[in-house]
Length: 460
Image (cartoon, rainbow, N blue to C red; front, side):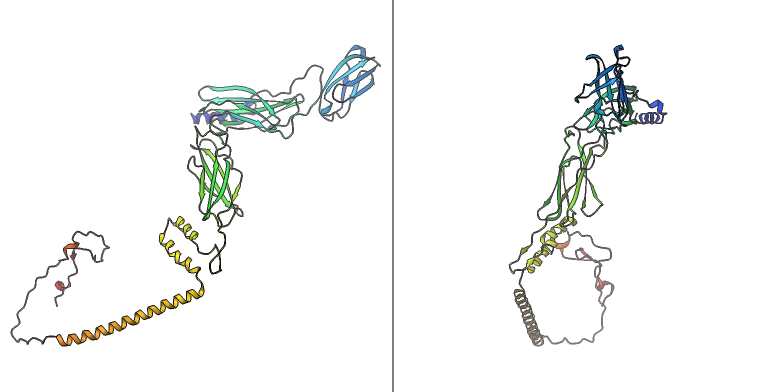
């Protein structure tokens, strides 16, 4: 179905220009007898009626806000360099008797419109609008011509008027689209007044692919106390989006203020906050967010306005010894950061504590403690060596007094003695249930059998 629709749309857009005319865009009709002109032109007004014919004196009066009068010989009044303010009715009189009225309309031809269409939610209609560069004249009208292309119902032509908003300075009109419709539209905007008309280029869109949300709202970037490289970012869905039926997915991008390259993060569906873990210390960052329908329906919204934020910065403090503590030195926060990056090492944190404590210790205290420690170690070594020497001399004296006399040497015939030694010597029964896995070629100390019996292979 989608392939057929795309093929049909391409065929229509590739057709000759005459085949794509959606409607007749002509200048507006004016009342009979109305004189039309462009600004800066010279206009001749003719007083109607037979009484004004010939060389008679005609008195002219402008019916607008300005009090303007002329007296002419004959029934013609010439106005040079007319402007928009000259628009109005001109009354001609003969001998204080009204002979007739001549309407004058001075207008500017409309500029060529540039039409844009969008749909902010799958539940609402499409809106097509045009922002003129200057305020159009009061007589300017706009009409939207459209072709609805459906693979099942064929083509459907329709048109609708577009209203001008003084507040938004734009012409806008709505194209009705039902929820779930998968149809193509080709639209064109005709802008016309009494002195001319212009038509925009044809615009084509798909009812679902054109969905584009507004940027996320209320973006807030804040620091997290104790985390010098973290930034907390939160936002809300735009007011034009109803999250009760369709959810949004978001992208977040951030960069240091001095960098031009962004880091982009794709976030889970319906997540309205995020914590940046790799911000630069003490550097202001620019953060933006954009959204898109959760199933990739339509297009990404525009990026939200830039919001800046700076990670938490530790305040300098004074140690008991009077030394100014620099937060950029080794601190608990630094190692907490490393825990987050490498998924935690409690050993690194435990090693840090003495480092931090020693940094706050004064120099005399450090020297006294170090000297006491060295003196204690030397004293322990001296005592151990003295005891070892004493134990060795006592052992030698005891061995000399208690050693038995050697047995008498027998010169009898020697008989060979055979000793059966098992190849595998079991260990104590306490390790029989121990199971372990060891590397190939390495003896396992927990194995229930000893496979290195050298007495059997190499008898002494």
